[in-house]
Length: 527
Ligand SMILES: Cc1cc2nc3c(=O)[nH]c(=O)nc-3n(C[C@H](O)[C@H](O)[C@H](O)COP(=O)(O)OP(=O)(O)OC[C@H]3O[C@@H](n4cnc5c(N)ncnc54)[C@H](O)[C@@H]3O)c2cc1C
Image 1: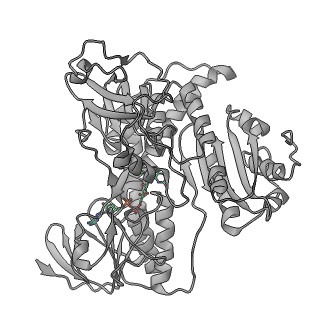
Image 2: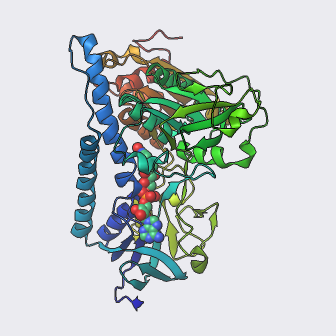
Image 3: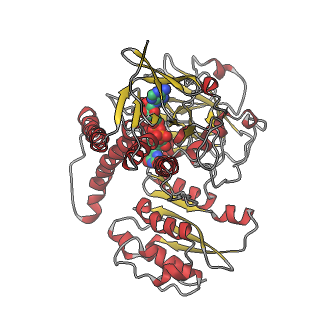
């Protein structure tokens, strides 16, 4: 072990969206920064999450567009999917973005060390790479992110049972895929593999998809996904994954769980973790009337001869589906267990590092941001915290506190939300005005071949301020940014309705919704 002669002002552990953004902004503000990263820079977002999944979803969208061409008088042959080439294309996008971050580190004078960091004292870090080095600094930023939750009996093996990382390394498409978890990750992979030709069944413990999301929008999205051929089994508890000789998922309906009261600071990914690991969520009522399963071609009932021992159990509620692979997407947990937090006096709760409003941990020289802290597991939250923390540490005087945290689900159509949902606002006892504008009200949606969906705007009845917005529709991810600005800056429906929105664009949805709040929308009948 050697003691490094490096003397950075700040050491950032982890080069995901939280860490790399924080490091660059610190360097811009004059700090000498060292980043320690054990894998490739870019973190989960670039290498295993946001970017590769969206690249593949875009390709899958092309398959759907080609199929839909028929309606427009454009006839294409059925596409042949070369999965290896497709994944190669995705890898090149990732590589390019990773190189971009490496370039930005260099351009900003940020030093990078490859290795795994752990605290060995309150202000001392050991980094294990090719050798072990001891590092010291004035301040430390923990930005080590998260990893998939592994449930007992459902451990991924990379073959029969996979997690989201494995799903991005497949060499062959599964013909039948079961996805456990109807959170963001589960639904995005459901969209992807269904488009690529797999028969997808999504199983979820709670009684709606995207637990915690406004049930009206979740139900709408579910209906549209079902129309695409994706099957859902909601309110069910998976009891076992059979790996051989045939892969099967065994489950029972009637999990006694109620959808949690939505909470503004928890993302759906995070809720997944809670719903699936919370022991209180065990089944107590095996005869729930909520489940109306659609026994698709891959469903077997208990009377079907099977090697599955559960099949011999005389339990009429027991179900089993045979598939080629099972993707477990039941949430993510913080990557904090190998950090030697106890040596640094840094406190954590269920693995999430506890921080104050300035991202300071229980050790005043150590800060934490991103997925490793409690809050929505989102790359843009991680990046925003990276900037805010750097500004705090460098004392730039610019205080950045955000209240609007948008969240996007890249299904087709997309679902994007920001601020309070209608049930959340009502649960807070607020008097609200709600506008609902169907997608068909704006011409642009029909030109995109997507006339179904909804924009919901929630405003305070007294002040007219925009409290929240949710959109199910194409380009919802971009559309929600305008609503995020409105929530963040406390704009009113009157403000939104005064701004001219370009035509024909999906942004007109927000204009119509703002006007509908005052009963003067043009393209929908005012209620
Ligand atoms: C399939 C999938 C799709 C997603 N899609 C989206 C999306 O569309 N939009 C969105 O906003 N979010 C999305 N997310 C979530 C997003 O990826 C995360 O919220 C984001 O990456 C968190 O950033 P982070 O910097 O906190 O952590 P991470 O990105 O996890 O980065 C942490 C880094 O720390 C490194 N590290 C960990 N421990 C150590 C150690 N001891 N020493 C050195 N280095 C260490 C890791 O190698 C990693 O590079 C998705 C996630 C997944 C899994």
